[in-house]
Image (cartoon, rainbow over all chains, first blue to last red; front, side):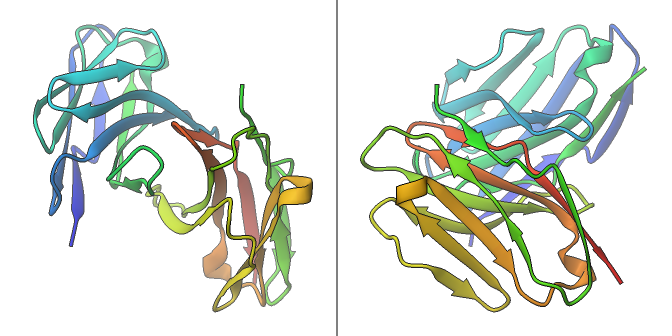
Length: 112
Length: 111
């Protein structure tokens, strides 16, 4: 069966520091991968998605970036965090674009 | 642009009551897919159901049921005999290229 991992679970970072969040999927090949952000008490905002290694599509212009160095690894990064980057970051995978997305446990990021 | 509307921001009911969460979508495509997810306080999004646009039969899974009405572009979710563990934020979503998410409905079940 497929599983999706995210780490760390929680993170507190100062403004201006770098960020690296990692997501890995097991039990499937060539999945679509997604990064979402959820501000406190708000809905889901799609940040990036990837349909293959090295293929990244950005949905929202910001100081975040994503990379997919391996088939089942998706990384969210920032060179300098802003206060507005605080939120709950969720990684998801699906087999195809219209298929069900399955989510990881999420990372709660607080930027101080 | 496509839009999914969950007009109920928050619903509060007493345990054992039935509750319906509304979802209205705006897709213009012939083929599309509708989803419901549950987000408990722990934060992880849990998949509940996926329906395609050609299957208008209502779905029942235990205490959960879904009513798909193409004529009104709605895909409503009913919990029968609610329980405290049903307390969560519920999201409806529509997909043809990417998932279009509703804003979510926070459901509070009081003991």
